[in-house]
Length: 93
Image (cartoon, rainbow, N blue to C red; front, side, top):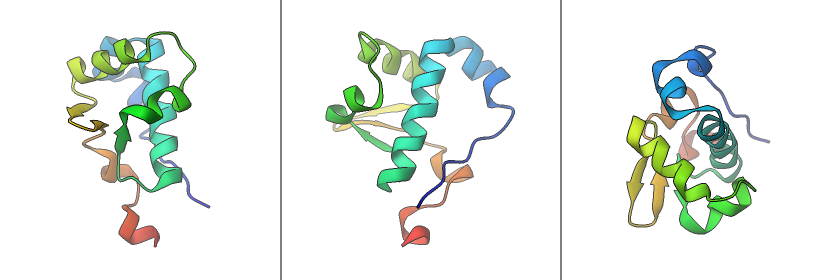
């Protein structure tokens, strides 16, 4: 079993406040998904709709990119600071 860890200052951080509640919720859910699937913070495009049922999740992802919480990649997105608070795949395995 894996665990997702969050900095308890994240919800009222400038990044989360600029992203808004729905995008911040997506980030939290994506972090949990990445932890479960040992992706080291990578979020494939095809996984986005499994992570959230919100309409237009790509807009929420774009918002997270705009505020610097996520980075877009050719395959989807990545949470650049994922391993700051969560173990990398190699550590878990």
